[in-house]
Length: 307
Image (cartoon, rainbow, N blue to C red; front, top):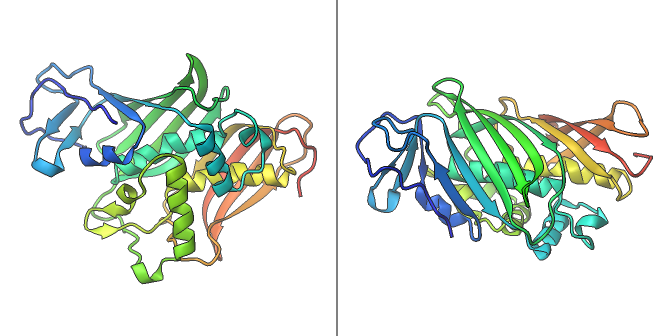
């Protein structure tokens, strides 16, 4: 069930920067969304609703916020770590929500709700950890740096305790941007099933991600890509891995990775130098011979060795 912003009742045409197709809220099976506009009752609201039958849209042109509520049942967290191959026992037999899952619940709603948003950088700093079965709250603060460029600050809480703070930088798609169109025949069905299961573990319908305006999007969501380094770091630390304190992903300007390879995206790690406290680990996401994305993680390790 999703609750949306109802605004001031003004539905006249405005000059919007982008719009959110409200039907995509149906993709979220158990999450709640609240859109807040402090200018809603003024003649120039930041958000306004356009009713057009099946294609109702919420238009945006200025600062606003989104409150996103959800909870993660333990069984879904266990499914998530199976899909991402995270061997850390605290997410399987314990009660701790994986940091990669927390990251996914920040990035993936943006990719589903706003297909025209091109995310270039994500910087998330963990200030605590969430527990299964309890209400988690994301608060998205939108700021337009310019007409096209956007900065989104996200604060994540559970039981009024800070869990994470995230800064997302991106811009809106223009007519000059290429769209990666993959024929259905070229898709690796086994890898596509993995991505679908990833969506299911987050209680989000995959169909609303792949169905874009006029074509089917058979590329990996950036949220899925951002979930891979955490698991690889844990696995290279013999299943211990400790707690990731910071994850930074630079998605640059390269096109999205199509779901067509034989093995899927590969995570490459390089530790700067071994420390007894915090470790700085550089990551690369490659597919075949092409390195697509770069990242950096700061980890407080339990294990002392990395392959």
